[in-house]
Image 1: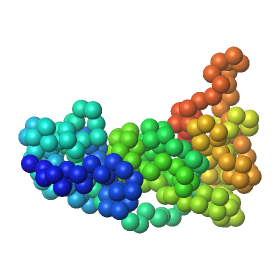
Image 2 (image 1 turned 180 degrees about the horizontal axis):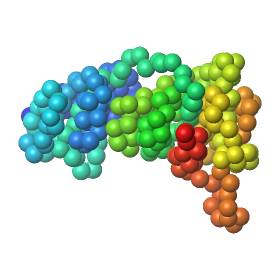
Image 3 (image 1 turned 90 degrees about the horizontal axis):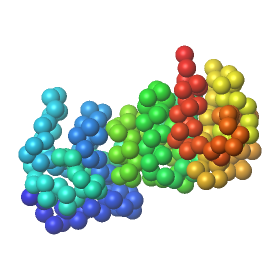
Image 4 (image 1 turned 90 degrees about the vertical axis):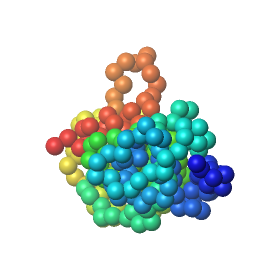
Length: 244
């Protein structure tokens, strides 16, 4: 059974101010919880129903609760057998590789989670976020990443300062926008930062000013869709940019 105080504390983690205060986030469903466990994230609380089967190799043991109790703390319409509270890692800084993905003002949790999953798929470990991006520990981001957030942990930075620094170190800064060079004709072998902008307005003017180049995905139907979803566009460009 989950106590009222414990239930209240976990429910509060749905809000960013409490996630920041507790330095903790919620993960749900067997797939997502187990990915964080395998990646070595520190677990604070773990709950599961009797039907849940603990995978081999996992040392931690969940507290068994009723489906009703699990539903009372779940962020999902229909809980899937298990929910865990993990500590947010304190130090996620790392060395920079030759290809960096940067997001400027991406605020939709579903888009953010999908982009993290794409970065995981295309083996892109360096993911930078402007400070106004959606919180990556938001429950919808965690769930839509399908566990990829356990491996690809983005870093929140002052994006303008970071891009200027990287440009000074020899990186080319390429911004995805409507009018630019065909992404498929660009040389992706040199050190590059690919910047994907906000869902509605694209990258900020001060970010655009830093760019060495602008890349676009050509629209093949003149009277067709006006634009692509930012996560969809990111996937298309990453497929080319990371091609061996």
